[in-house]
Length: 464
Image (cartoon, rainbow, N blue to C red; front, side, top):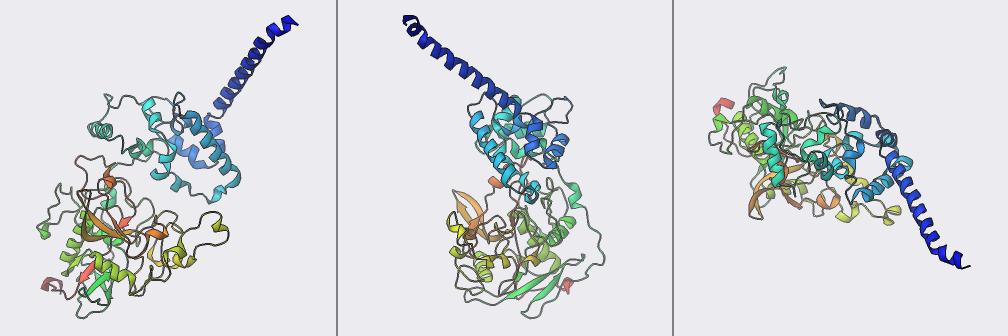
């Protein structure tokens, strides 16, 4: 009896130790099994994951070293956050595997930066690339890494290196082909001459591009003006880029309107692969949009410019007294949370007039997808936010007013009187150029503009 008592406690400790050992070994085995590339790809059942990974530099490179899925998509194993993130990722993946219709997932959209940032870790990047300034780094890369080193609180590695994991397309490669001139079937010889205040179709001389301008009924405090029926399209904006193609200027001075200098080539595809044509032009800076207006004025002999905030609001609300020109209040269109959403859905009328977060699939749309407002203007709300001419001071820095919300906006961000503003530095953060471009935003894809034309206009004889 004494002997049993003597060894009872040590035997218990031994049992606990053996259980812990077995559990740890089992856990380690499970970790190893669920960390293989084959396991990851079997769970993420779409061809993009496997094929695009094998095209990218983390798999296909000169060194022959393969970077595996978990090396990027989990923190390093010795990091305190490794197991919490692995459990979190596993829970999401299991739910998606069993309860999500994968055929309805837009994998291309899921691969974009704003989604990819949620599934990659700076700690993992630095774990492999602890030397940010290797001997083979280019001069541009050296400057870019120095900028990252001084702005770690604002940047993630993936901001500039999205291409290395999947796909193999360089984000910051100058797209010179974008500025190649399109073939013109039959160019307009003169701009449209306007003699009275009514809707007209403008013709850009020397091009085959035209666009509709709407005569906006006069309010009490604003002079009469015309406004573009749709947001400036890629068809229109590319004519400006093609004609003024240059290396661009490093200053924002364009005093000589007869020598307008156009944009440098953008980095990557400024349309984000969504298509051009009548879709709204995007990713240009406010300066670029303003320069386009100067160029258009020169080409047509009219006075084109960006709208003021007051003009934009008047044109958008179209004499409505509610939150939206198509009627209703914000609460009518807001998405409901559980359990309210089980009994009441948002009013779908908004989908007839607005491209917003509820129906956009996170990209721009063609203007014929929605109905116009009572003045005849299309996409005044949603699709892309629109530059106005007004300046606004934000924390001691000059920004510009933008209105209308975009394809990313929720219902509460869409009312005609909701005032937003540019975020110039934040929208330029991953631009690799030093100095940064004055023409293209590197980190903003949902802002464009529409033009206003003043009336009456003093059209020069050369345009008559």
